Image 1 (cartoon, one colour):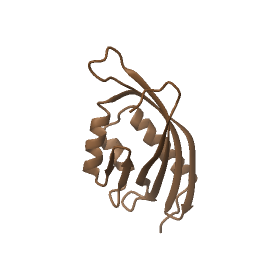
Image 2: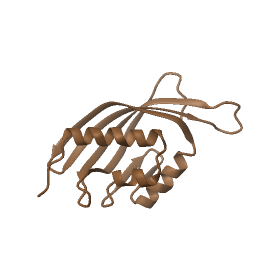
Image 3: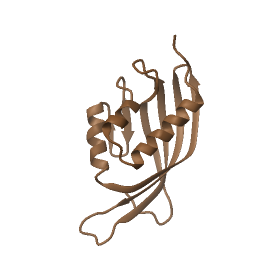
Image 4: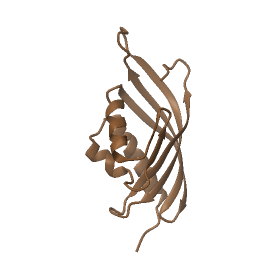
Length: 145
């Protein structure tokens, strides 16, 4: 009855995820990309385990960062049926303004991430169940978080 995940599905999930982050998509578009069972999101500043915690985090960061651009550099998936361990490297660029500074600053870094992706039992689509930011590698001249 169930279908194994495919590399194409995982690639499309990653591309769609970052497109939505770039445009600060509404929660109604972002939440369906996350598993509502066993969710774990590990960011440098917080670990989130519920949709409500993610929503609070997301609403905060979209008010801090602007002019965001995510460029996928690597998506490597080790698929085991309806689950996959995925290694991602994404270049993230964003502007941030820290009052009372006269100007905004530009952050530019490569984020090394590990995801666990699974097939949703509700929708049948690939969703993120575990999202871990392993390391942030700043480009030369980048502002810092």
